[in-house]
Image 1 (cartoon, rainbow, N blue to C red):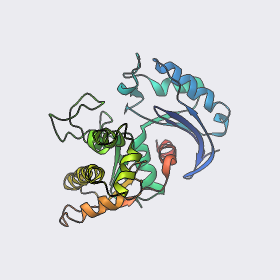
Image 2: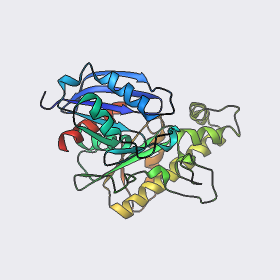
Image 3: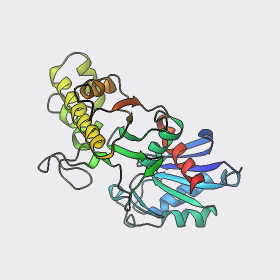
Image 4: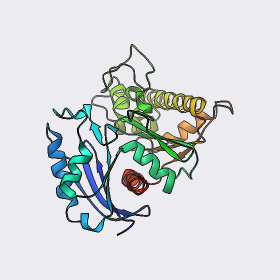
Length: 289
C-alpha cells in the first residue's frame, strides 16, 4: 500500500480512476463524465468511482482539465456555476478521507512522460494535440506549474490577435489553428462536414487543400516549440494526443524543425504512455508532495 496511489483523470468527456504504483497501472476503470452544471456532481462521481479502491491507496491524485492553483480548481470551459476557484481537493478529501494532490491534466501527463516515458528525464516540453492543444513543462527536474497554474499551456499562445475566437475567450490562440477542432473547421470550407480524420485521409490521397491545412498546423506548432526553446532552453518536445500521434503528423513536425537553425532546433519524440500519462504522472507527483 505504501507506494500505491488512487489516481483520477477528470476530462470533459471521460473520467478515469486507477490504482497506480511505480509508474504502472494496477487496476483501472473509466466512465463518461457526468453532464452537470455543478462541480459537486463531479465530486460525487469521483467519490463513487474511488470508494472500492481507496483503502488500498496511500493517497489520492487528480489530473484534471482546467486550471489548478494549490487545492482549488477552475474549469471555465465546462460551464459550471461553481466552477471558479472550487475547493476540489478539500471536497474529495472530505469524501474519501485521504490526502489529495491536484494537477492540470497536461502538466500531469508531462511529468508522467518525463519520469516514465519518452522524456528520459531531460528538460522538456510536452504537447498534446487532440481536440485542443495542451502542454506541460519540466525543467531542472521540476514540473513548472506557475503561480496561477497556467505554465505550459502552449495552446493558448496568441499568434493572431485578430484571428479565430478560442474557447478561452481570446482570439487567435495557437490551438484554434493547430488542434483537431481547428483542422476540421478549416477542412469544412472544402469538404462538407469534414472531420479531422477526413482531412488526414484527403491529404493522404494528395488533395492540396488538405495537405495545406496540415502544413499550417505543423508549421505553427513547430514555431511554438522553437520559441519555447528560445525562452526555456528545452532539450526535447514530447508530442502526444490523437492528432499528434496520427499517421504522418510527427514526421511533418520533424521536417519543419529540420529547417530551424541549431540554436532553435528541438528534438521531437512521440509520447509513449498514451491516455494513461496523466494518471501515471499525477500519481507520482502525489508521492512527492
